[in-house]
Amino acid sequence: MAAIPREAWEGCSVLLDINDGDRLAFFRLTPAATVKVGNRTCSLQPLVGRPFGSLFSVGPSGLVPCADAPSSRDDTTQDAADGPSQDETRDNRSLVDNNTAQNLSSDDIEAMKRDGVSGDEIVEALIANSSTFGKKTVFSQEKYKLKKQKKYAPKVLLRRPSTRSICETYFKKSPARTGFMRVDALSLLLSMANVGPYSDVLVVDMVGGLVVGAVAERLGGTGYVCSTYLGSAPSSIDIIRMYNLSSDMTTRIVQAPLSDLCSLQNSGDVSSGLNDSIQGEAQEPTAVPVENTQPSVPQPTDTAVPDEKTQSSKEQSIDIDIPEPLLDEHVNQDGNSSLDSKGDEDGSSIGPKSLKAGKAPSPERMKYWSEHGFSSLIVAAPGHDVESFVADLLPLLSYSAPFAIYHQYLQPLATCMHSLQVSKMALGLQISEPWLREYQVLPSRTHPHMQMNAFGGYILSGIRIHNGDACNGSK
Image 1 (cartoon, rainbow, N blue to C red):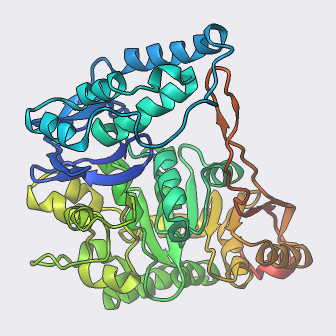
Image 2 (cartoon, rainbow, N blue to C red; image 1 turned 180 degrees about the horizontal axis):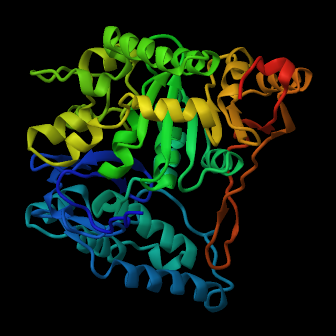
């Protein structure tokens, strides 16, 4: 299993956390990549070679590493912890917010900016010229500092795109793109499907590739992830391009239509089924869109990554920049996403690696799956009736193989569960509702978050068993 990279490199995808979650954005580190923080446009080249988790501030020359950020944060936390014992009688009852407490005017602040004064120095000047800062409680002083730092001294945190960070980013600002799948629901899917090294996992991913990428990341270059789909056009798995998967991982991700898998399962002559499958793939190039087509001229798509400069310059109210999963027709026409087009422009090596994901499986691999079956099944199709195609998916599994089905609503899973009970195709059926409570952990202020999401979808899980009457001659 390949080691997880600890430093950002040229051409990789990164997640930038600006001002402690106020804005989240995915970027590809190319020589021309920039990010707009406040009213300044900064190059992303200082991020190359820096370890993930590094904190940057906006300086006169662009992004500057904050070497003393952790110590200052610890000092602030310690002051806040000691505050209640030192100032037990202090409160904010006598403070009146009439905009007269600050002695510095906006003209003075603009003059300091023109003189090249750093943001931290401006914050210290605002604190020194505030007539009410010393009368506030320690907690109020900390809030005041954070508010001014976000405005005059914004911070940028370099994060590695992982399954958790990608899922949390989409769920925070655009949950509909991933079927309202929360990170605890995704982890429960992987656990209930028993996804581990050297597994052959059959996935129905209609949430943009989030589940396919999560499975591939957990497999670590071992086993296979077969993303199947209904009809002739494959579902978009564009999100996997942000995972920074290695070549060993991407080559383990294959796509095959459900009709081809079922024909091999039901046909007694495996070789004839393979020939039909190969001929169908030759006639239908959309089955492997990321390798069969590559435009000579980059075409505009609906993703948010190539429009970073445009979106930030228009001052829109949307405070997150995440690429929207491409529609099927866009994938078939372009065969490329904005992340890959940026990687191809500067000749980086990560672009060709990401193009390998989603190719057609080899005939030998198809024959192996037809004889032995898949080791587990994961279905994430929130916009479809899962009962209609789960009966076709379960015979593709080996006996005693676990499966997990996600849906944002309870009724489709209840109907599917009843159908499986009647057909006696599975046992151990249960519907789970994940529950998650986030806590704020601060000195003397540890409590659940005031605003939380109470809905995480539902998961139907079970184990496939043999039923001669229902399987009709399957293995």
